[in-house]
Length: 230
Image (tube, rainbow, N blue to C red; front, side):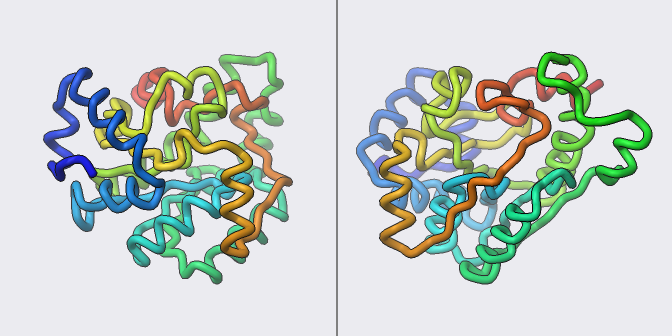
């Protein structure tokens, strides 16, 4: 395993040192990566989730390593019933220390004032929607929970933007060290993990801020910080 340092030190490290660290971590299992991450800032880590397909893998790994780890969930109000059922099943099964954050406006209120969710071709509309319904509550959660380590379920294969990231990266939007233990895992590996541990999955997932899987909602993109500042 890499030498244990602190999250603050890693946040200020240079790109070459970060590449070397990621090369070391790539040889470790997701569970080992997660335990390493927690050791960088004891008691100052969170895991984020949206309960999309395969999220149970990361949540299981995280709660195995730290049962009371805060789980930040932005419930934007547009989730389908199956997602809420899945979230409650995982909360009960894993004993999740769930921290839901909601937008200032409910989905019904927002739609009544601003109209329906923007069309997939409305780039500006989707970014505005995301800033209001996802980024603002997420920023509020990050401010209140004040983590040094942000554990995510990002994977290289999810879209071209994420392919440019790595297991560990300094996140400029929220000033944290972002750690993605499953970054290099395939769908087949995730399916095998779910089967091995008898964990549920959920496919009826909808992210209104993305419109398609190649689009970013802003949490992991540089434009997210600009949207929050405007």
